[in-house]
Length: 161
Image (cartoon, rainbow, N blue to C red; front, side, top):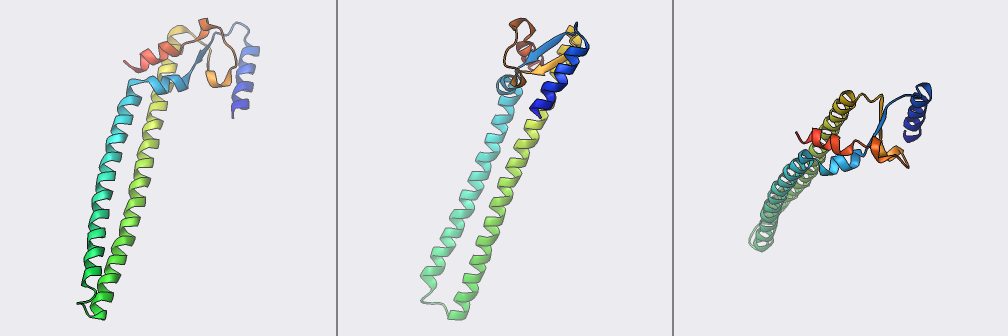
């Protein structure tokens, strides 16, 4: 993919010698944008809530397991087996719930990062149109560029509006 982008950029530049080109460090913009910090705080809060829920459920299951062990001597084998099976089913449900919570958190994180990437793209587009650039290339595809064609700070400023 990187080679394809580099080849495409080369053709654009070769076709139009007077092309106005800019470079943006999208990784830097992503890491330093206000929206990224806000999203990270939201994800952190969701993770904290999920951990609390899991810890509470885990504690409850542990108590039920200890209670069942302490009742083993006084319960009939059939009743004990039923309660043990019910506990096993609760543990299975807990594990499934845990996996769903993890999956949901990962999905939300991915969606939020995609939203940020789209906003970065919009900010790049806005700056490129304002400044009249024919192409904007990600710094990850370039080994060297003049500081004069760097628009990273402008993109970050636009994104933080």
